[in-house]
Image (cartoon, rainbow, N blue to C red; front, side, top):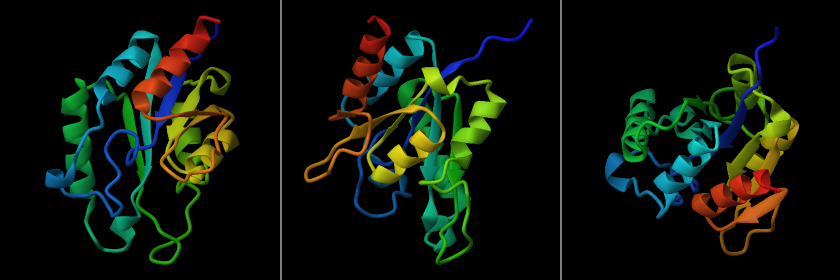
Length: 177
């Protein structure tokens, strides 16, 4: 008998799990969590979703910070949300500073690796992000997308929301239809 497939919510980091600061977020003292972040993750976890972060971290390729800074931010995020995140993938590449990479969004390799490793059913899964490249990566991986809109953004996802909590409510509410 085949193992049942999991459903997952893929999450961009900056602008979704933490406030976007407009520069490369790599210092703990700059880390600010949006209101409702932990509550949104809890809603999704209670609904049976795996929670997997997929984030570009080009600041590594640009020499602005190292892997340790990224791991410290992610550890702080886990503590803030009660260790609800199942996995964290990050792409340390930038085409102008290191190499081209299929892991870097808008490509979908980070999502595809997680889909294979965690036996995820894309048709039951979602990508939440604040950039068009997040939406593009999600669509390439075959998952539905929710674009967290900021002022002046043109919607690029299947759905839109103002923040992670609203996106989580949308996902859980769609399950009940």
